Image: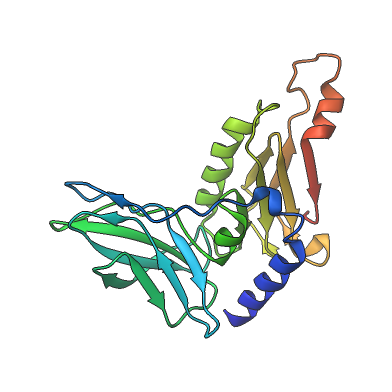
Length: 224
């Protein structure tokens, strides 16, 4: 994991300027009052100088919390801790991702959104996919994004799909809408292989400027 963590840091430093348009805004931790277990929200992430990290989340009334950890954003999350406060410090941090559930009266909520070094740096709309991710979850996320960006010519959302070096499923179908970047993170295009990347050429149904609009919509590089 140390090698992967170092790779991520180098990539993030190099691309910080170009990816700033995808970054999110950190919100203050708030308290959610609930009679039943609900997924915590507003997760924040801080990496410490001693190779530990601390995550924080919104409080849920009367809850304890389970903390889950995964090697990549869409991989399998395994429980690593149960805490009774709305923060957790991981002393075995190696560049992973985290999710949290609340437990109220023995009932566990669904998982929160993920948090990590990359998410804290770039925001939720920048996705760094990895070969260890679950292919069906990658596909589901891309499909949901495409539903809003396919015809979002004047929308405000911005997305980046960045694929770490490796080979992804042949069945993975990456359809790209407006304001969406797709890139492989290898040194050469052959280091990152993705099933299918598609931009729809007839979005305007045969109108005069179909081709020009398609060019403006999609940029794909560094991936085969």
